[in-house]
Length: 151
Image (tube, rainbow, N blue to C red):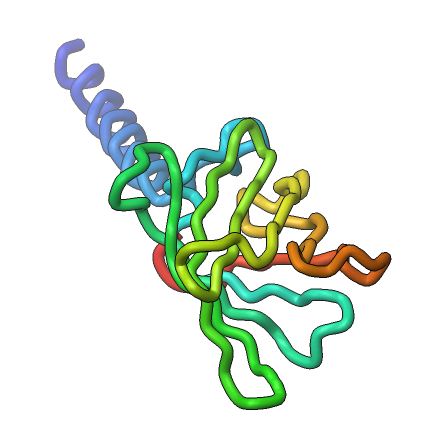
């Protein structure tokens, strides 16, 4: 009787161990927009802004002074070549805010948006607004998409 139990137990144990090993390769669940935290923003993003000739590249990381915030750099192609700016912002329950400054002192533009549903924190849509422009052209739609690499 013991021998029969042992013969049944060994294949069952092997099947359980195999299932456990396979489950380790399953990716974590996709976070909902409300569950996005600043660490989800770390990395390189490409933005398409209405009215801009080419994409804008934004690189974000941990803010050195403000816990729970991000900072980094922005680069866009302008008529005189590459234009660079500093950026700082945060995400709160899926709402995204980023401030852009070409001189590190004054806010030149703001990015206000929201993580899109089902994007797993890899797409943001919203409005980019140039601070010095009070015309109706000041606000433009944007889409930010996170680029490859460690996520």
